[in-house]
Length: 241
Ligand code: NDP
Image (tube, rainbow, N blue to C red; front, top):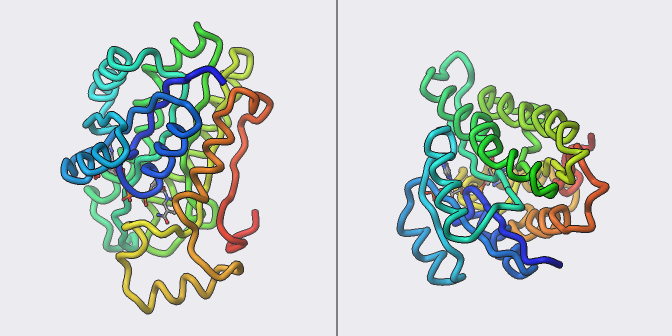
């Protein structure tokens, strides 16, 4: 396989960390983007040797600047994994506009903000692999997550539309929708809640970041060129679409 340049947003922690490492192990030159946790990013860099870049994926100008920086450092980006995401949970009657906008910006605006500066180059080079990380809760809804479920459902529609636009240009666009995985986003919840979550997963365990990373690594291969516009559920049987 050609050595591709891959950009993984939220690549310094959790699922993104595992994706960045899997793509590196598959021969890609990888850039991992993070937002504010310099300590985690430096630890990730020291551990993996993968280059880290700091910007806000919800900010279009920052994304255009950031993509230019990555291109100067590693070359044109062939593979984009839109993984960065946050939660700001509250039932709608208590949700603030700030909670709503933060989640929509990071989880959905980022799709446009990151793909826009990259898509023209991918079309010109007639190659691109884009994987967007959705969520089981964008597929089935979740109490307290109207913002998150809306953003993640939006990711699925975005994926399908961009897949149609990219199909004639060697660009595939897919969505991977994980169920509950062992990351800080999940292990931080109350112990009894975590137990109830695990009890509701037929395979009897949380997912791991590596479970998701293996799927992403497969989808970005050169020879995965017939797979586009799809959403892949990885949830241990918790929700069957
Ligand atoms: P983590 O909270 O473990 O890591 C989030 C990563 O995203 C960090 O690197 C963080 O940077 C980065 N990030 C957050 N906001 C921004 C931003 N505005 N700009 C740039 N980078 C940002 O998340 P997970 O690994 O748990 O989740 C990864 C993805 O998987 C998300 O899209 C999430 O919605 C999705 N998902 C997760 C599930 C789970 O069970 N964990 C289940 C289903 C979906 P920094 O370190 O600087 O904060």
